[in-house]
Each structure stands twice: as C-alpha cells, then as structure tokens.
Image (cartoon, rainbow, N blue to C red; front, top):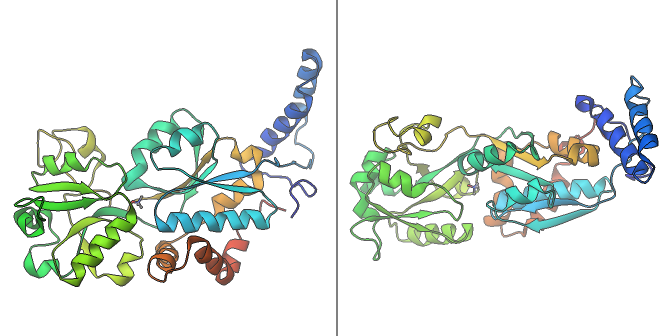
Length: 347
Ligand code: TMO
C-alpha cells in the first residue's frame, strides 16, 4: 500500500474527526486568522464526515529498541510489517529508563513490550501528562522475579518458598559476598534493595550490566551445579532450556509498595514479590493515532502470547540467529498472523 496515494479512512474511536481537522490545520496554517477559523470549523460542522481520505504523514515511524531479546525481535517484526505497508521506519536503541521522556516528546513513537513488573510505575507517571498512551495489552501474562535452576532445590529443600532461600543464603554466596548470598539482578531499575531489606534477606545484590551477562552466569553455575539465584522473567527463552523456578515471595499487592504497615514487615514497604500475572503493554506517542492511523491500528492488533514470545527469544538466545534474522524467520512462518493486523482499519 502506498501511504500517500492510497489513503484510507480510519474510524476507530471517532478518530476520523481528529485526523481530518489535523490535516486541515496543517494545510491552512499560513492563512489569516479569520479564514483559518472559519475553515477549521467547516469540517467540524460536517456530520458525519464525508468518506474523506486521510493522508498519513510521510515522516518515519521511530521504534524503540530496548535491551532484551524478545523486545528486540518483536520491534523488528513490527518494523517490517510497517515497511510492507509503505511506511518509513527507523529504530532507536533507548534504555527503559530513558524511553519515557523520549516517547513523551515524540522523539520515538512506539515501544512494543512494556512489562508490569519493571515498568508499571514509570508508565503511570508519564501517562499523567497525556502524551504517552497505551495501545493495548498483549495476551501474554508476565512475571519478573528472582529465579533459580532446579538443582538448587536439592541443596535448599524448602524452595521455592522465600523463607527457605533466606535460610540458605550462604549456599548462594560467592567469594565476594560470603557468608551472605549473592543475588544477580538485571540491569533494569527495580527496588530490589528495598525488598532485600524489608524481608531481611541475607543477600548482596550484584547487578548484571546486560541480559547476556545473566545467561553467562547461569550457564557457568549450571555446568558445575552451583546454586545461583538471578533475575529472570517469563515469557523468556530460559524456560525452554533450563529447568528452574521463580522464588515465591509474599504475594504482590499495590499497597505493599506504598504502605509500610502492609505485609509481614510493619515498618517497611516492598515486603512482597512482583506480580505473578503481570500485563504486557504496547505504548505509543499520543499523536500516533492521528499521524499514522493505519500504523496505530496495526500496533493495536499486534498480539503476542507467552509461547510466541518465548519462541522469538529462543531463536536468538538458544539458536544463535540475529534479531533481524529471527524477525524474518518469524514473519515468513506467521504470515496469516501479521497480515491480519490492521486489517479492519488499513486499506
Ligand atoms: C523487562 N524485562 C522483561 C527484561 O524484565
């Protein structure tokens, strides 16, 4: 589809109105005020709007690449789908920490994997300003939590209960942390120190700099069956290659993070685990629906479940493809899936 030659009406949520006024406004900016006002009102007075075509912006769609595999592959998949519709696409590597302000300002336009466990708070904060919007949830249910390979259970039989982990902390010690246990956190910001303190865990946190570093540590420990506990998430490729479990901390509740008196430690917040059935959202710059209505509809329809996400991650981390190769393979094998995205809204 040629975006400019073959524009299309978009009717989701009455966005057609918005799109038309926007297009008019852009065209009429140089005209004197009174004329402008009259003309601006014209489309508003037309009800319902004619089957006017909505020219989409020729500006490139800028997609955010974060730093874990499924997100990288899924972003490339979306980018290729956009290209197949005639859009220009640019990718930008942005940390999860920096992405909010950039989306807010429209420097980038889309992030396809926003996880509840690591990003719920930042998303809530930025949404208040109204320039970052949700484009729907994936079907996938997510979890981000402390995780250990199964063989650790033989040495610490009460696992996966967190109290067992607390009691066998020294089993998880490294040369630098002993007698305290070592917990390898991810490179994403989380109040992990606060939880260690609130639950009185005898653990020292050592953050990995990259996701790959986590898997290197896991592989090394697994080879010699050394107990290890590290940050992991699901869906991820790990679950198909390494038997293991998440640690079961006290169940998550929102008050756990705000109300110190909640939970087993009456003096501190964060005395609970992360959500177990977390959401996974797609988010966008607020002007995306009116700037590229078809692309936005495609984003809304894009939907990955747990198995699909594990699979795209495994193509890279287990099978050794690059992100791009994995995206191409997936696109080649799942045409019916991605060709249905945007079907009812794009021409
Ligand atoms: C954001 N992540 C899935 C790596 O926890």
